Length: 101
Image 1 (cartoon, rainbow, N blue to C red):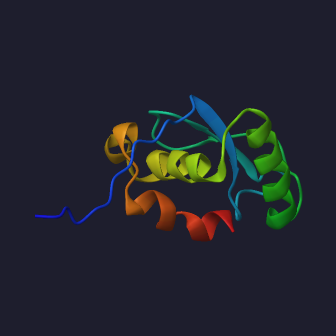
Image 2 (image 1 turned 90 degrees about the vertical axis):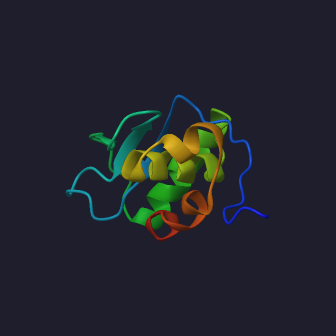
Image 3 (image 1 turned 90 degrees about the horizontal axis):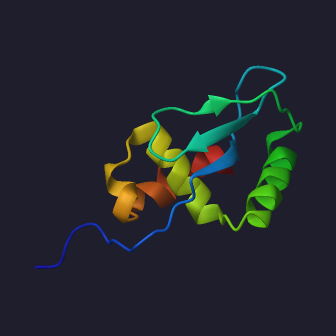
């Protein structure tokens, strides 16, 4: 019987930055830490969420962190880590995509 959820091994970084539209004025960049519930707000504000997202993605990329890893990290922080410690489920790709675009 085929499993309902497609799983693939995902190597998650210890931490990454992400942009969350709607954070308090003056700080739209958050830090996701693997294994922690919730995000750590930073004092960083890179302007409009699209511009901020480009800056944060470039920064993450310089650390070897891709967009899929960023999404999985944010999903883990927001929805729980168990599915993300060893595998990527459809939640990682879809549940937070509206937050990151």
